[in-house]
Length: 544
Image (cartoon, rainbow, N blue to C red; front, top):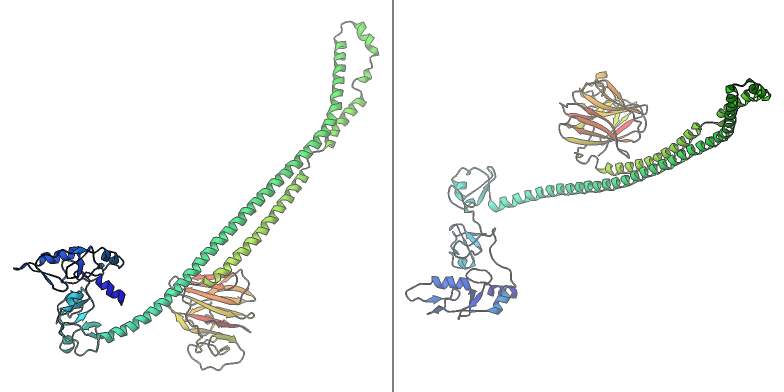
């Protein structure tokens, strides 16, 4: 309270704001310099008498106030009272905008604290919170304050409208009562909106978390793939060195063997060249005596059979020297490539394990943006007499005991049943638990499906779509067309995902990871019901 009193002293009574350049009159009251100047200048009369705006004390001359330094320092400690754009200002404070405290509906004027003190206190001068829109408070027909709310027309009315106007026979309520009722409705709407906001926040967190997981996984996979490529590159470089080294080794061995054969052949070649030169000299001699005197020259030394055999043997040794062992080179390559492939398979297993982990994390929000609130219950009036229904109407089981249900036109003669719940629009998600053994069919069908004969079997007509499990294999069926699926059952919880407008009906195994079994594409024209068909020792149960 002391702080409030002090704040009042720091407020100029003219502009109702904190003092700006405060000055104090001789009577002791303080004002803004600009405010008191304007007030004193406007006080013109025959006596030229000036009065204090606060206490009305009279002064013959303009009282020159003194600036109060201490007051300036104190004023600066308090926030400004300058009206904001959203505030309503006093109608009568035309020189300086002053925040209004109340608005008078009769006068259609807003008043500050000072003008409110001198305003009429009569009952017809109804005061409300400051407003600039008086037309929204008064009746446009009778120009009276609207005090009632017509629940039939949903409009606010005045007393005259209620008594003499077009609302005399309507149910009306006082405005404050109608306002409280609307507030209660708004509170309920707020609760629903808050719940949706909470769900949206939760989904946002899930998606953001998933985004982070994908980013982390991508970084990890990138690192592992980079390491794999680097490892493969290193192994290939090592393999290249090994193979090239083996080729060089074999080349060197063959080269040494060939060199061992070349050296004696070159000596023999030189010797033969000398013999050829001597023989040519004899052939060119013109003196017969000299030619004949050389008769003692051993002719057998030239071109005899033994020499020829020796040469042929040396040529034959060329093949004995050997070739490059290409087989050994290829074996080295195959061994190296095998080691690389083993490394790739190891990395592939790591990546698959990482991908499986991601799929497990995705399972929680895979079907997030769909309606999961439909409570699937089977319609007992459609169930054949050779299936049993659980008490909660969610489980359909095979039986060989006739259930003796009354005959109706909706009842199937085959072991199947339709749900009482149906879908005509939107995206929906249903979970179904299945038996580990036996044959069953799970799908969706129009209620106009036949009830007797082969045409009534789901999947055997154009009014039903089904996933069929038989002999531990899956198949998809519609209008007698069969699609064998390349999957073996690995999970006993399935999901039906329906997007009615998009014409999509999908079946999933809700395992780890989620497996997309099959998707039908169609144009749906009638309400769709969940359809169960049961073989021996089998059962199906709709989950909440």
